[in-house]
Length: 353
Image (tube, rainbow, N blue to C red; front, side, top):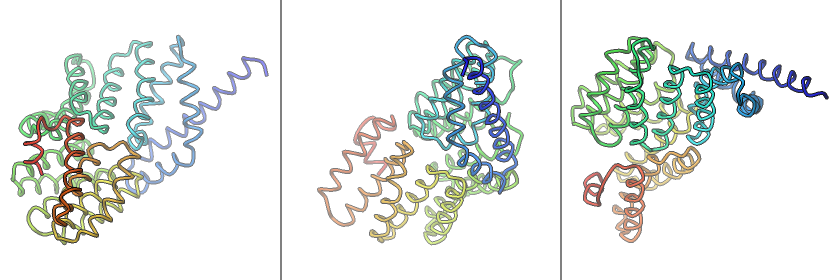
């Protein structure tokens, strides 16, 4: 087949699956059952969508038209890219960033940098996520969409909450929420604010933020976020001593996470249940939950999840008076904490435990 004909066939293949991605984006935007149908449509077409991306990644070179198509293709793929393991997600985003440099679209570059920051946050590299978001804030100009600035503030708030800088997290989350007006956007950052209140012991304010965000997520049909919020509410109930209520909420959140193919969310709910079972003295159930969570954490490169799994296993070892295993787990916990840049020494690890 002559070269122009091959190129024409490749373009037609790309254009067709670009339309498929458009449909997926629209369905996930609608939320609810449409969101699930959109993700199912990706699963059916994933191989050809990946082939389209690979062809585009190897073809745009100095072609600005293809570079623009590449940026558009990756950015409208965000609804399913979020379910990718961080390294795979970063592979797509790196290609899109190079394409945005070629077309010299600064606003698109900033959007892609924030997506990269989100992927690094998922990977547990919180300090680099903050660095990228801060870079976006410094490069931001008033002519750009204000949501870029708000997302940068929100990402810093999210990362700081995981690092343990609760006051810094609250400051940046408030900045983000002052800009974000849409229900879906607010439902993403309000629960993080609630989690910060929970860390400070202000459970009533945490529950208030969670309940408001849950209503917004439900209204927007954002099932993925809804699962996370219900899990957070479960943690608050557990801290208030209502363990059975918390387990009920974790199980419901687990079912929602599975419906939207969110393996990270699924692993987090297994960990939440394991933590409660361990505190109730039901160690066998705690072990079973961790055995469900750990493979998901490894598969999805969820470093924070692995850290939490080993915390639960450490506690279970103490309850069993298996001090040799407890010592092994605390060594793993400390190494993971160093990778996550959460703690600087054993004393802080022990205080966290």
